[in-house]
Length: 58
Image (cartoon, rainbow, N blue to C red):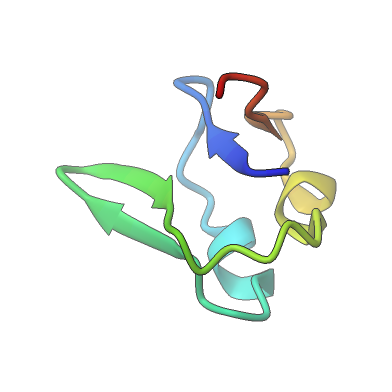
């Protein structure tokens, strides 16, 4: 299960701070979850605007 950060992101960086494997990075003025994500879900739990979701696309 891989998470994605949607356009609803308000750049509070709470997810960056809580990620245990530093999988959330900023690139091109957007936040992304990279391949080191372990799908713990902590980022989604802490997001104040629910901008982090499970990516159902394969």
